[in-house]
Image (cartoon, rainbow, N blue to C red; front, side):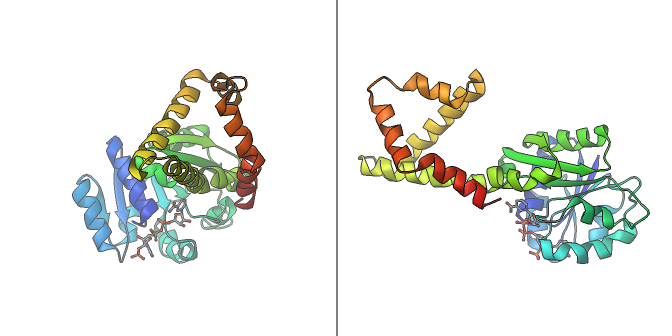
Length: 259
Ligand SMILES: NC(=O)c1ccc[n+]([C@@H]2O[C@H](COP(=O)([O-])OP(=O)(O)OC[C@H]3O[C@@H](n4cnc5c(N)ncnc54)[C@H](OP(=O)(O)O)[C@@H]3O)[C@@H](O)[C@H]2O)c1
């Protein structure tokens, strides 16, 4: 597959790097004013083609991924519409808040192009994204192509478009929420007597261990909790103290507020 990426910032650059690492696809990245980032991409992954002309990324591409700021997408698409063949090129966007109907409208009223909304999270740069994909007018094999590409850079869920906001709250904002838990646990560790760097190592390894337990056992988190809480022991005392301070409610309220 030939994949054209419009925009070489955080997201466009991370997707390009992720795809380049799989070595399965040809990637062309364009950004008119971002020569520095294009040069950095090229020197890190010589197989990536770069251009300051967006039409270079579109010509011959099977998939075009738009990765510019939301207020620029209409201007970028005005430039690209005349060179996109919506009958055989698939248009995808990571742009927040731009829905599938809006993407399809770029093809004009008489056409029903296959369009895709993709929400990766920032961990895509480390091959650990939680990516949501919603599509309009797409065949199953087209969706499989996207799942394959983004599945090589983390986990993918194909969802109805109405769930994209919820997915963003859980997985994109969720990165910040996980960081806040890590910081809180680290600060607790420091109060209990560990230095900051040791505390961070302990918290990260503990979270990795918890994730490994759930992934490997398929257990429900509450069942795993039961396995580490002795009757009358210190873990249940800690959990109950956290809940008295509103832990579960705070997490759910935060997720609902960010949808
Ligand atoms: N960052 C995230 O975690 C995240 C997560 C999910 C979705 N998104 C979405 O991804 C999109 C990009 O976000 P980002 O964080 O990657 O932003 P960013 O770092 O600012 O990247 C945007 C890129 O687009 C380039 N650009 C500007 N005008 C252009 C044009 N006319 N043609 C082609 N490229 C152009 C910019 O170059 P200059 O800097 O030279 O202007 C920059 O390289 C946003 O719409 C956002 O909603 C981001």
